[in-house]
Amino acid sequence: MDKIILYPSNWLYNAGVVGFLRVLEDKNIINGMESFLKDDGSMEICRDIFQKLAGKVNEIYFSEGKVASIVGKSELYRNYLQPTWKNIFNKFIELLQKVIYTGNCDICGVGYYIPNNVISLKNSDLENLNKFRDGIRILNIRLNALLAPSRKFPNSFWNNNATSIVCDLCGYILVHQHLAFTPLSDGSEIFINAPSFKLMWYLNKYSSIFKAKAISEYKEILGMSLIEMASKFYIQLGRWEKMNIEIVSKHGDKIDFFSLPAEIVNLLTNKEIASLLTQIGEFKILNMVLDGKFKDILSFAEKILRIFFKNERTKNEEDFINTNIKLDRNNKNLTEFSQKLFKLYALIEREIKKEVI
Image 1: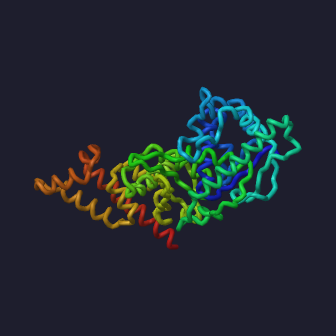
Image 2: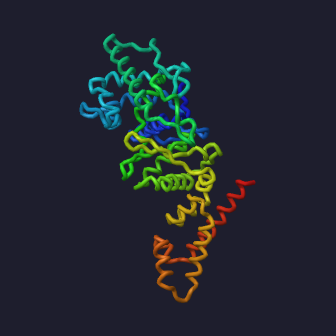
Image 3: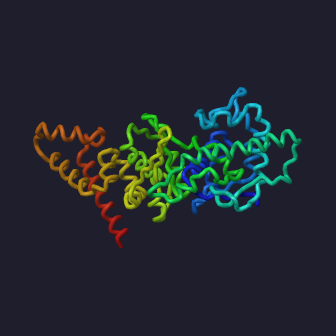
């Protein structure tokens, strides 16, 4: 087969795939993700991709004899890619074109291994290649320690023991996992995990736009990422996908998970609601939706309209407007703003009734 099909698995592997895609895009190895990311959540890799990658090994993975940032700077990755192994690493990537299925891998469940009968190397190079492959497995045993069960995403956990079997392709992909994480101002990093590579690609692309200062704001990042995706693409989510979109946060050795209820995800990915929330642009309103406080949207709109129609506002009313409405375009046109809120509430009620039916 000319193509290798990958399916979502645990969050660490999924992050590896997204990080790998970022390398392909950043180095102009591919143009657009449309042919790679499938509607069923899987991803197809053309085998000739590895030939293109092998031609850019020095640019991507090595720089002036030092391991580049692709391998990471943590203790976890120290000495993983020896500068003297550049040629061996290059050969390893070339050989990934020829991986065969064996059904023996705890990550992908399929197992993609480089068959020995296609390796034509002198003994010393073959020995180094096997050391490199062993190094991948050792690294991935250590990476395995990062995995922990998630309350909302069953596939976030696999075996969690040092005897896990990792195939050649999965081992290579896992090297890229840290590239999928978005660094935040509090020192943590986040990755949006989902049961679809297409969802993960777009959600993490938009999450990198937003920054959070505390864990309480993760819901805003996830919410805004869903809104951005819904506004720009028509991606229809099934109930399984709505229930299993989560933020994985990493701070040192600590891993946490955050998710939104499926009904909230459903609202945020409704194109009309997403578009209206973007037009409104107020975090106060977004958080009412994220928290499921839909009646508060109606009450807020009614209060704004009452204040607008008064001949003279009290200081408390002025303070209320200035405190709760941050954008000038909304502050200067309260009638239009309140009408958008009424429409938002109506759309939410309509969508909730559809879900009940």
